[in-house]
Amino acid sequence: MSVFRFRKFVRSAGWGMLTRPDVVFNRLLNNYEMTRRAVRMLSQPSKIEVEITNRCNLACVHCLRSKRGFKAQLGDLSPEDFDAILRQFPCTLTLTMAGFGEGLMHPHFLEMVRVARSRLPNANILSYTNGLLVGDIVSAEDLVRSGLGQLHFSLDAARPETYAIVRGNPYFPRILENIRAVIEARQRLGSPRPFVGVNFTMMNENFHEAAEYVRLGVDLGVDYIARPALILTHWGYSDGARRIPRQELVEALTQARQAAVETSAPMPLGDYMTDPAEYFAHYEERRSQAYRRCIFLWNYIQIDPFGNLKLCCLHPVAATHVWGNVLDTPFRRLWNSEALQAARQAVREGRVPLAPCAQTCVRPDPELAD
Image (cartoon, rainbow, N blue to C red; front, top):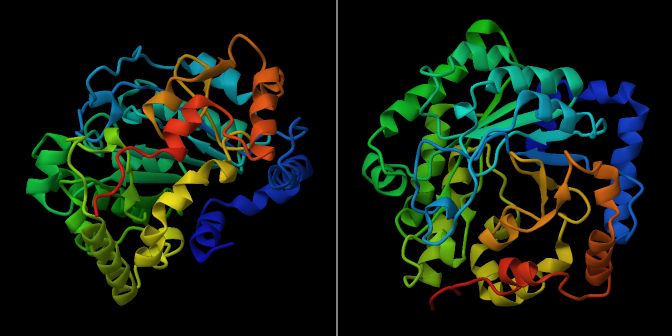
């Protein structure tokens, strides 16, 4: 367990799960089945993502919602349906109340967090936000009192002018103020939660600010700074024809790593942050085999605001693939449906399980520019 995960475990009172042998057993069994690439599952996923709304108050250039031709039904998950979904996952250890929408736009956000905390008292309950509605729709104090375990603010910029381009509004100072407000409210109320983090998605417009983003997170005093995220597919660029030069991307990530080391930033330095130059020297080879490391067919599942069980959230094609609806068919039946078992069998045999997987993992589009 990494130091970051241990800190979150302690802060969320996660040790309480030790009083639930069924939860512990399910987690161990799920790890075993995922490692063995089981075809028929006896365990439930320990991580679920429930998108309580796919409405948003922004139109960011890198979001698939902003891409031409991408259409989706918009709506909110009702509190009743949310509770009905949670009843099907009593062994969940991580519940993410997020997706492609802004969770704080849901009129019952706080109520749903409280329901989740009641149903899953020892789970890590987290959400992502663009931060604009803190202090407006939802107060910092209410967020702290709600029982939310983690709250991650999506920055995607380290400078106001870049933020205005990427997220389409001039309110960068307000977001920084709201992050500080949540941290201060937590301290004032003497609460260990929520664990506050920041995120940064790299794209043409902002990748050169990766190191500045790390230093900004340290200055804000957040608990967690997510690694600069990579969306190296056509929908991850505001201009799909324009590529981030490979060498410039490596330099930006190397500088971000150096900034994290120099400031002792609470940012994990594994995966592509261990050695960016080495990682991207073999990028195409790594991507071609990415489906072999898939976790979505065994553990981390997504459910949209209408109850649809999704493949994963990494690509528009995957985001529109549906395995069934958990409000119409019990999850335990969908989890071992013929379609899901066939997909698991394919990965077990070293085959790409579905056409969407090829577009999501195997053939990232576009490739990095040399």
